[in-house]
Length: 306
Ligand SMILES: Nc1ncnc2c1ncn2[C@@H]1O[C@H](COP(=O)(O)OP(=O)(O)OP(=O)(O)O)[C@@H](O)[C@H]1O
Image 1: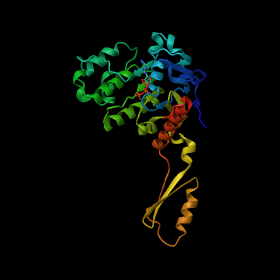
Image 2 (image 1 turned 135 degrees about the horizontal axis):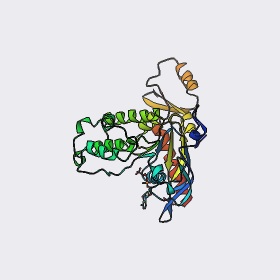
Image 3 (image 1 turned 30 degrees about the vertical axis):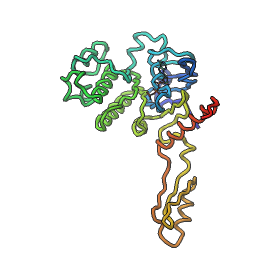
Image 4 (image 1 turned 90 degrees about the vertical axis):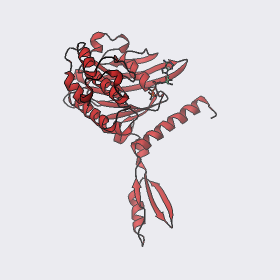
């Protein structure tokens, strides 16, 4: 069953059990079209939550509403107990933001920028520690204008976590990062989680969601189509396994909820069963099915003859 509600962690106090993020019926329209169409979601304190969804699904719009930089057209939203539409400076100081855009001054070096922004935080993480955490040691003295795309993402991540935020929003944080940098980033997120921070990220990398997230939510057509721990997403879709084998030179395939029974029948036969495999849907298979179903449902609802 789909659950949008995060379970409180054992040993937490009442104040801590209030979700870090809570939205009910979140709505955002552009030109009469709802791009966020009634989202209900809670992210628990200390949780790492990944929002998945195709391009244009409404993920960035949702995150920017939560950050208080975009207005909503309807619904209730609380971020660390505050409505982002009226969140003030003290509230903002509790957030870390890594957006898709680039904002850092081009003429300053990595170290200079981090030192500069450290002044905006009460207890900033030391610049050297941040540089090491995102693997920019060799580029510490390099101007931003001379960094590669992936190196700029690393800097953006460093700036986002500099103020030891209680809640970090990361919009496609690892886009453009090489595999080593992505793994460094994963370590950074695990470290934040271990320190008790809440993380809400968007990603198009399903392995990243599976690796990092306590729960993932799939958004399509502005709606949340499923939310669950990565291994449980699309529970019904996952039930069926596919048994494949080769017989008389042709590949045979059976989709079944009881693969053991199919295997028993096959192996009870007289000879070998060449090419025998049993596969379950991967997270990517489940994701693609959920997104396709949402698209079909929207098309049907709009009476689109396509
Ligand atoms: N300022 C705007 N004016 C009009 N339409 C907008 C505006 N910003 C976003 N949209 C539209 O809202 C929809 C949702 O966009 P959004 O950026 O939230 O998607 P996303 O899920 O983050 O996509 P991506 O994975 O590509 O980042 C898109 O159809 C986009 O074109």
